[in-house]
Length: 340
Image (tube, rainbow, N blue to C red; front, side, top):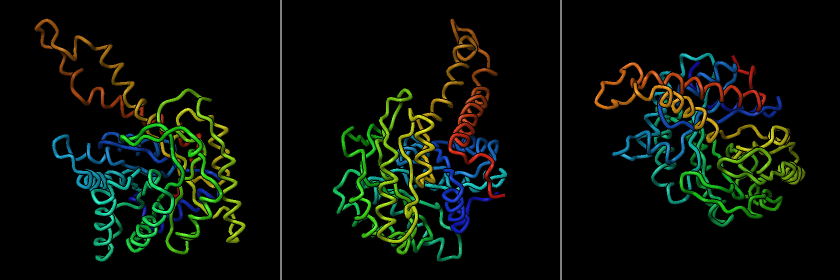
């Protein structure tokens, strides 16, 4: 299937909310991790979301180029070619973009999509995330209004965050304190500023104790009921059931019952990065340890080309990450729900 059109992407999110499941949004940093994500979705018979962060996009452009827009554009164009060979539908998304990177990442990418749409083409990416969690809520919402209007014209769904996700991702650090829990007042202010779909469609990353990084199960203190509180408060005012399309960030270490409770309150997208990074890397480490004298020219020997050929361990890495994507689809109940 091709990359999702704006209409198909909207249908995907509607189906997820109505069907009580969420899509894994898999962070990728290379063509190979992209292929692993696509393979995992196909094996799970799940549609899904592939996303790239500012750091991932910079890495994709090359270690000496370090240009986020170049890397993101290259990924999107490559994905359009290879995704067509998989029997699932995938949307492309850009992850966390803080204020200081808007002019070097999200805004230029939206401009590219505006130009594409003016020529009758689909946007380059189907959604972009504005991460205003590090600025005061009033400023966050003012910037969100400007970006949402532009995204709507480019036929793009915007994602925004209110509250703070703890831990660290791409150098952005969130302290672990009460700001990890979005309030009903925050949600009402958001609806007042950017509407509930009437001013352009957006997804909302509301926080309920989320923390980026690696944690043992049970360490992260989630309160999924926070999501119900904000949905109920805004829904009562605007006469809509579950008015927000919610996003779950920082899920590593979360208990399965907490994840599925969050989905029941309207989570349609869950970011997956830490777990798939490890699933990709673990088979490579195994290969290197088992083939030490083959991947290195020990004591002047010649090594074994078959074991230091990147394809030999790359295939194992792809399979390992794909299996973790399948697991994510099963946990989020999207497995077996593909559109066609």
